[in-house]
Length: 245
Image (cartoon, helix red, strand yellow):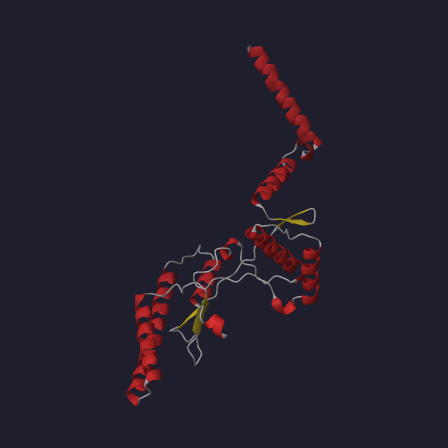
């Protein structure tokens, strides 16, 4: 890390090795952040498949064609420049699939948290002073943590199985089995497509649904015999109303 970035960065060591032999380090740069950064949605692009030459030409064309306004308002110029860069990236860089956020295991409880916390403390103490006593204490607490999590998982699975009956859906069992292993299904959102183009704004989606609902419920979709039956029924209703009056 360069000296100018080091002055703007904060770092902390996480107490979770995530299966590795080393503790991960979390580095945050400009933690307070720029007020303009959160104004834009997060864009996930696949940088390994990016067409950088096309992206460069798209950016140059947008600036040569005057799409980036030049005036005394710095904020407005900044907004236009960022939008042009994002538009060029959307044309030349493919998107990545959305990732699911890590969810907590269904059997995770306070006992598991306490056991993992004690294990992590023993590991940190062992890393600072690798004596036989510290190594033995860490190995002991590591086994205790594994047994605590295993017992919690077995207890939760028994409680879940006790709620099953002959009408229970098999999909419910499979979903719980996946959750017990930390597997969650990430559903990729599907965009509405109208006449070959994606519909993203909520107002346009509502109008598209309304137009399709009108077309589906239109009388033109009814068969001729139904139209005749409805015409006769409406005619009889009108005659009944006129006779009563």
